[in-house]
Length: 64
Image (spheres, rainbow, N blue to C red):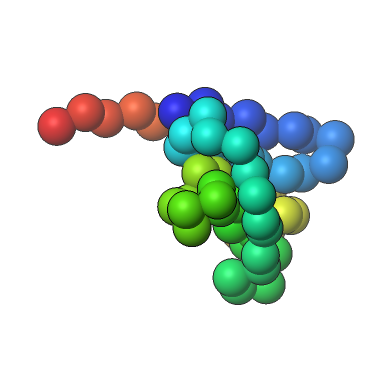
């Protein structure tokens, strides 16, 4: 998994898989889901992240 926040564009991207993206779709306004050729979600992008998340450039990581 990779997480990237671009401060200039205010976009947060979370990559869940390294599978190639074959299709993308906007599920909710400003949230774009990326799918592979088997319809698995491989990543998602949050546009205008600073308006939707309290602090988009702070990541908390937890494993259970």
